[in-house]
Length: 304
Image (cartoon, rainbow, N blue to C red):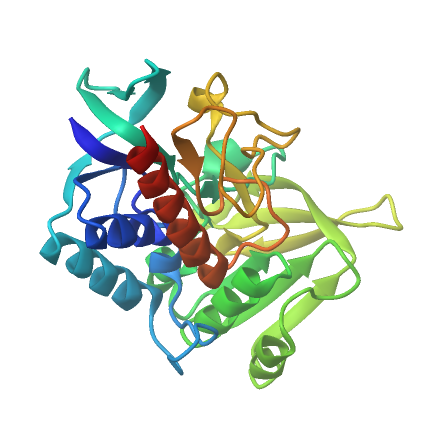
């Protein structure tokens, strides 16, 4: 049996592992995809204190190496639930393996939110992408669009501007919500244009593998049509907490209800990172949650 099982290998989960390991706890980290979470796909991180600039992937690699050197164990597996036995918890997985622990930290992060418009599901991976860092190079010298107006969308649009002939940003609001610094960087690119106050209403496949993207202005009934080689979507994230609904309370959006103490309704089960209800989801808040959850788990173990 482990002292702590951490579900999720993103920034919050690995930071929780770091603090737990430094408290001499045995730790198992379960991750279903790859370590690092969303930050691993960020080409440039410039808002982490003490580091002027770094790639998200480099940050994730260094954090993973740090916890492995301290003795963290890990498995690449999908978690299907948590059973509370009072004296200990059991984390169940898709492959049938069960992990017992004195405490559990849920840090599963969130997944990319979809547009939910006609044609998106059929064309996902066939012109529609959700990660510019992963797929941007496939569209080198081509015309693409980015849907979204927050930090992630503009950061990825800037990345695409370096490799694509033309980048069109489609934002449903009449303004961008990203940081001023990103807006300043974006405006330096002459091959970027913006369509504000509009929403994608439908997507169709066109000749030569292109996409016909229909865009509807908020104050009009008639769509605009854009012929593009690719469409990138960065409109936020949504949690994957359904497996934990019997252990932790979920809000109307599916996030685990918790405050800055990272507690859940089940003693000994804690939550950290983007999967919990909060106002701000940043790398700094993720590592903060990981710290708080790990310390809380260690205190729980000391009292039980």
